[in-house]
Length: 68
Image (tube, rainbow, N blue to C red):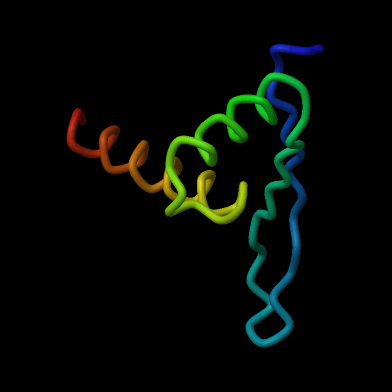
């Protein structure tokens, strides 16, 4: 089991504007999957891994913003 978080970054083009946007894929496996499962068991407000990742990302970005 790996302690790594695997993420893939790709560039996409918006059809409507032609703007280049970054798409990020997160592989949910190993230790990360176990960690997310524990969070879901302890906090029934979360119904999916996606909800946990979204919440963690927003809270983490807010913390970084406040520390800057």
